Image 1 (cartoon, helix red, strand yellow):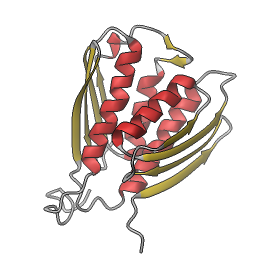
Image 2 (spheres, helix red, strand yellow):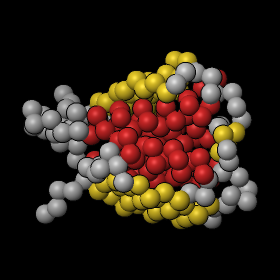
Image 3 (tube, rainbow, N blue to C red):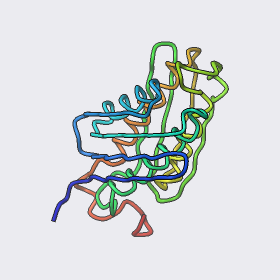
Image 4 (cartoon, rainbow, N blue to C red):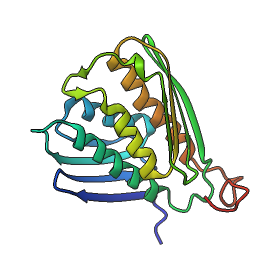
Length: 199
């Protein structure tokens, strides 16, 4: 019986066709193709800094805009995280990280509790409407979709920053580090980390 914490999820709609293969216990290897250059860069950063392995292929209606591609990728990534984590036995459950990137500072906190909730404080600090070919409004849409699809509490606080690229990249990297902490196993945890006995 395999104990590999991996998942492969595919989702096809009239707007997008998405496939994600995720391994939680990886080395940071990424192969990303979403059709949106900056989004590729962010998902690559997430993979590398979380020390996951991930393959992402997205065919979306970019002739409309990037909304469906980014949001639906969040849905599929959340499903992949949920499946790869599995029964949650032995994991730390909580993860948090405060990450600096030049003038920006971002904190991310994660609870793999099975209950979706998303909080994003400091969103107003992202003032540029676009970074490359990426609509910055989609940062919220992506992480909201991840949190609800994965069934996790996901909180961000942008403490300060002025460069949209730096703030968004700090968010993706902080999320990677927080999630890596949450899925890490601790030999002292013999079941799931909950007084309920289940997550």
